[in-house]
Image (cartoon, rainbow, N blue to C red; front, side, top):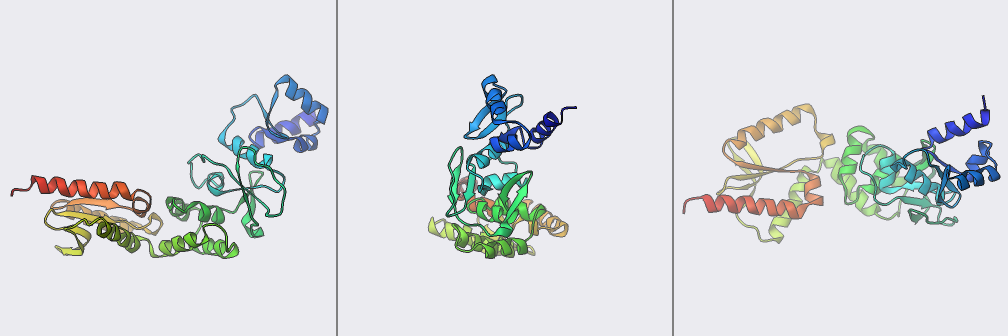
Length: 293
């Protein structure tokens, strides 16, 4: 049994087929041997000093790992790519964000460099790669993509851990937006979502609606009474237990016998408000046009 070959094969299997020159040396592969592997096409150069074994697909994980290692020894994965690495989402990141120390030396190869200092508790190792903690990764990626925080809170973390990470890293880019998002998450976002939508309806001079309209024992979040269009705002999924879920469905079944019901989430209202407003106006106008004059 060739111990050197076994060590190298194990390394490549555990690290997505990516290896640096220094790591190859630790596996017993000399600099000359690395050069021969490159000339033979067995390995390919991805970034300076970072190589990939050409006998397997160049996966997303391999691309991320190579970019971080290519940015220097002090680089850590951050942003949406870090959320992907933590397996919170399966959305393949378009941009690989890498964080390096404010005063460190780094190079940008295949990634976007962010220079700042991260609290030590928010630097972790996952599958052999240094990455911002799950909580800091979520906080920084959820700005403009609040579904990331909602998904993380459903299965991976809790509000207290997010608050602690937020407090450990003050003054970072997006910290104020993250603080507001945490406050919204604490409330469940339902009332905040309603305020957002009401504000947008007023700003666009959309008329004919009533907020918190009572009908047959139910309170509708927003109602176009004449057209019988009910708009219901959902809170964040992580707040919803079985009883609430069942109660909401019973409520909707009762309403839908008489009303046209449109349901929107916090994600809809923060990331696709234009489509929401367009759908509301189109629905109300369609019913108005069909009503007898």
